[in-house]
Image 1 (tube, rainbow over the protein chains, first blue to last red):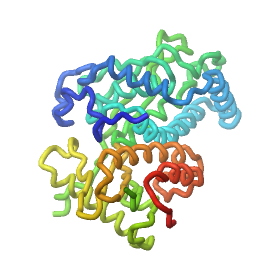
Image 2: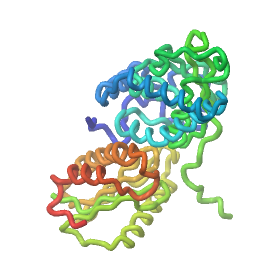
Image 3: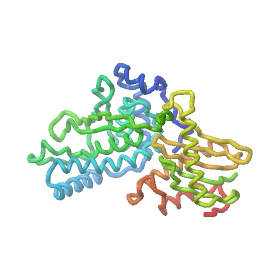
Image 4: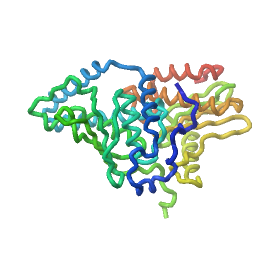
Length: 221
Length: 143
């Protein structure tokens, strides 16, 4: 279960020694210096190693949750918000599981999180392939695109709420919570959903700020 | 080749789990709290004095003395896992144990919905699996 790799798994790190500030000024580099195939493999291995739960069970349980939230909150906007909040609390905790199990190389730039979230985390927890895309010019935003959504397999959203409800909004919360624990405060939101007839699912992740990891020594003067 | 002490320290330097095993001097809990937060501070300072960019340096990871070896493992979330053992326990063994401890923490503390993050770990399942993990490395548990 545990690779005898270094303290911070040291695979495919070429080009990652540059500091966070210099990365920001670079042109968009879709792979952020990662070996994409290697990342996909890491995700796949972690997926195989983990305990698998029936996708149907998860989809139905999630469906029941959304349905219940509808009964409780009525307004689809509130349901979106509540799903995001639930996801956030999951993400805060799940990220340690991810770090302990995935052996993914560490992210030192925001841009790098795109690759890790899309190629490793989506693969590992959902068993689907996702890809990062649409990087903003200043690298403070990116999109995660995926074509299969295990949560939405049996879902038909009623017309009345079709344009307000983001059925799988829990994903956005998970991403926000998980990234916050590794010092990136972000806002994540669905921009496209196949349930609305779009050709793929798209989650937009925007960096709000990088959290200070330590208090700088010279702040007291 | 026994392990003396295991600490888990949260992001703000609070001790959230401790275990001390026979063969070492056993410290009262208050002293452990103080030790843990001091260690946390030292670890933070060690990152500040690093000559390279702070993002690329994780600071203090191990400390060797004549009579013991201290190993510290800090995943990206900032929580610290610390083990103190006799010097003949190698660095790799200690790191392996601490990584498995991280996994136990993720499984039996964080996934327990009634465990509040950053608070002391009082989860039966965690204790059970922790003892299972430590068994080969200890004589008799004190606490």
